[in-house]
Length: 212
Figure 1: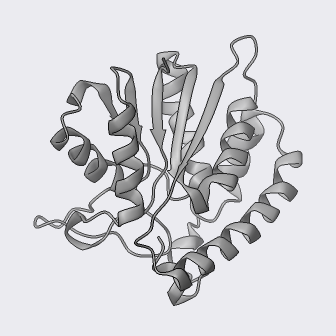
Figure 2 (figure 1 turned 180 degrees about the vertical axis):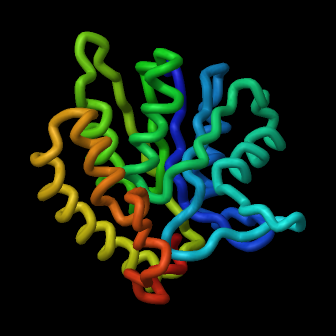
Figure 3 (figure 1 turned 135 degrees about the horizontal axis):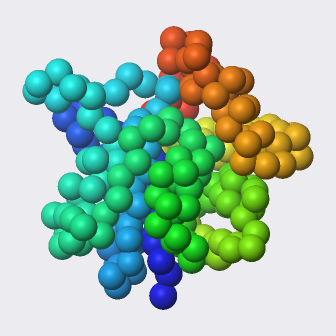
């Protein structure tokens, strides 16, 4: 049995609606649930503004995911949320900093969409491999299909994932400790540094943005 199932973010729409590919990740976690924690990740994405609730507050994706899990019967005290990350690197880092390290959760199963799996695996193996001895993590990964994603959108997202994976491969050899990752994340990453430039730029095409 794993200590926790982790679900990277897949996007959230107006009125707190999850896209089908995010729902399928959660559905698979529900099917596998046997008492371990389920960790819902992500505040949202830099590629689109967050939806707002009736009181004017942002709707965080992981909170919507938690409500989805609770509605399916997962006990609320076995669900952990993370409302700080805006990309997959952030998903992995904040999950480790906020939940898995403090709670001693070592055996982790990460579920995401098939199109997102190669980069997700590379990121989590990198982040959870930093300074992990003498208590190394045991990671397993699983992809889920999304037959409802339009073929053109699926192809576009696959293309972007491939490009992002190549960029990641150039980055990871330069960061070899949690301290170095923390420094890079909060001084150079456009979503987490003080300038937070990622939130006022439009780095992806409109079609690609539909997949976030």
